Amino acid sequence: MTSNTLLHAARRTLIAGAATLLVGAVAVPSYVTPTFAADGPASVADLAEGLLGAVVNISTSQTVKGTEGPGAVPMPQLPEGSPFQDFFNDFFKNRGGDKGNGGQKVQSLGSGFVIDAEQGIVVTNNHVIADADDIEVNFSDGITLKATLVGTDTKTDVAVLKVDPKGHKLTAVKFGDSTKMRVGDWVMAVGNPFGLGGTVTVGIVSARNRDINSGPYDDFIQTDAAINRGNSGGPLFNSAGEVIGINTAIISPSGGSIGIGFSIPSQLASGVVDQLRQFGETRRGWLGVRIQPVTDDIAESLGMTTAKGALVAGVIKGGPVDNGTIQAGDVIIKFDGKDIHEMRDLPRVVAESPVGKAVDVLIVRKGVEQTVKVTLGRLEDGEKLASGENGSNTDQGKGDKAPAVSTASVLGMTVGELNDETRKKFSIAADVSGVVITDVTKDSAAAERGIQPGEVITEIAQESVATPKDVMDRIGALKEQGRKNALLMLASKTGELRFVTIRMD
Image (cartoon, rainbow, N blue to C red; front, side):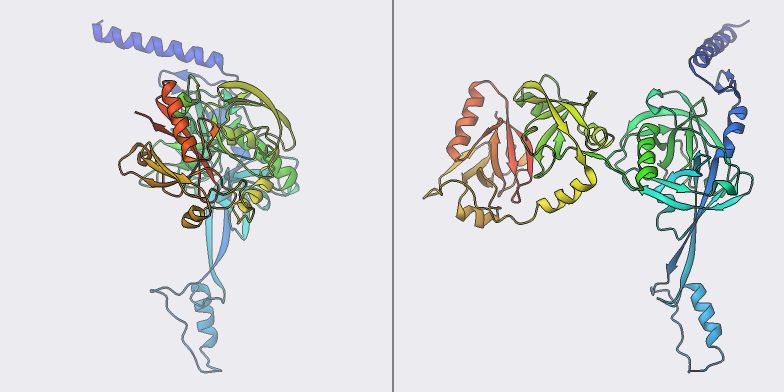
């Protein structure tokens, strides 16, 4: 035996041994005992056979009214009583050429799966059934049932349908725990790509916690199992036959699978499905704060050893924490026992919490960790409140007006007192207080941070400032302490808050 032959044999032995360990670590249902070869599972036939009945094809139709574009053919104006009138009416109605008088039927296809056989509950993507006039669910044995819409959630792209369970014997699957999935675990996708129902593909979990900027709660499972158009809404199974994801998006220049697909994790989807079934809508928890990332500079300015958590940039008036429980400048590092590693973790964790629940929130305030108790509101109510918060405010600013305007130059900015004259000049709301920035030097540290004239400095290093002298004193004090950056809380003309750090070199 040559040295190369021995090397290949050794590799096969190591891979086979690793596969044996993997099988031993995976819980599998009684109807399947997968075996693994050196290059992956030898067969998933038994697993697929037990699941295909629960995976369905979703077909929808929508009437789209005709539009008069450059290439549209207008309906001819015929004399009253013309014998050709009926012919042209039918022709242009079917072609969508008569605007406002009928339209074209547009059909689309997707996938879904049954999660409750007794109630006839089917889960799919919202974009699969959005704006549909008719929804049909097609089963693997050829039976088709009309479906009604139970509820949708555009933020997570999840929809729940209902079919008559008496119309067909249904097979259901259940959600598994997506948090237990590891990169490298085997997964199986079943769906209706390009209208080819009952298609099974196999791959692995390529990555977790993917943010593809499709919504506020992005936390996708990435997989290389082939997912194509028509797979949307279909299930991603683990080796135990449990749904650990809902296939929803792909990255593809050509429109076909290139091995980069994304699934909504079951941890997120299952809660949304439960709420849609119970209420017909979502009822998410709401904290009532505006947040921004904690950068290394901000962490240093706040006395934090590492950059983590979500920095509270503002508190929404009338929200759950408008009582001072949480304040602008606080950094939320743990919510209801769950670590907040980065800003985007917080909205998802809060949204998954029940409305009205009292939770412990661990914050860092002026360099000191402390725990506060917060009772959550409802996000859907909070969105209405937040949208109206930016309206005009006729309240007058507090305190006497200074008789004259004084200015100072600091960190590449010219700052001045905020009085009637500067409010009018920069259109600053009456309830905004602090020191107004009247000019920003080009190529300065302030300009690099995107600071603009008309913004108002309300705090420096978490202490309020009201005059240009306050600004100079705070910057001087920070330099004496050996600080390299100054943390500024800035208010926009309408009162929106944000934090920035500026180098004090």
